[in-house]
Image 1 (cartoon, helix red, strand yellow):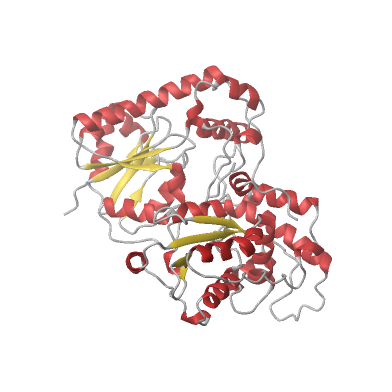
Image 2 (cartoon, helix red, strand yellow):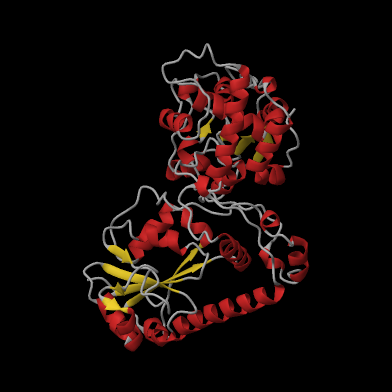
Length: 474
């Protein structure tokens, strides 16, 4: 028997509650029915009732709608904001048979998003091509009232749960892109089903930094100077949180040295160097670790060292583009390639083309368009997965931290000297240097690189430029 009769998602406008609801409804045993206690409509603006209870009936007896939620076959619930019908709040909060999910978001982000939505009239986005642009004007007094209201409501939720001996399932806005969190929430609600992917219909509407979304950003900074917890100058990151990709790690055959790939299209060169270190073939290198097996390897290899290699974002993106998208052989992303040709109109050769009529100018145009796609993709605005080969390198390394960080993070232009030095510290007298990454085909980056390409890459990978100190390529 389930421990819950129904559930409530405590949220606010512009916190991602529509996206959370869409993913909850993807589970066969769950049903989230909108803003059931919104003062102006029962569930959704175009509905006349919720679970058969009309707006007039609900207003006359709000607890009748609670009873309707309890009587559904599946586990049903609703979204509740601070300004919804207050008459049911205590009954819901004090009921241990009601599961509480609390969704939160940085209040500055939600406030700015709310202001933009007010300006554009666009409250949901399902196609990034129909996105409406606008900037918000920050009103310090309005935000202070907004902030005080949210804090008071959150404190009320917390204190009531504490004094009644209950707990809630907390979800941050950033967690909404993590399918494992959604699956964990469903398990907590008593559901056994699991999602393989998240809903791809709703897109993030305003993925740019706050400095680009607020018309009077400097005034906002001054107004919020005493509230530095909002971290206004951060580069927004909408990528799903990553775990450590332990099966991709590769150890040397004898030397206690571990390579932790960031997937920068230089893995083969590093693997060849590791193999040559101990005189074995690349296929003989220990790999495909589980976390258990890697811990065992670490215990057996006292004094072990680990390393990761990062590349300049432009070079990395171009290599991924050439090897995974332009080329059609082993390792290429055929379905994504087809989608990029058909939907995003990249002028790359067709599947059956030999590429002989693919010019350098077409390649430059296609790569520039690929960078535009990556910007939307990393902002969560496309239905295509964020593949690790083009995910931000900072996000990949943050994911490594869930298991263990590398001892050394090297730039590509350092490995010729730093990797041999690392091997010498582990006992090799003359380890040799890894070979340089092979030049991209059909055209090298140097043939198409210019200021526009650099700027596009800097927009896509601003977080990597900031975190790792990259300047212009070359």
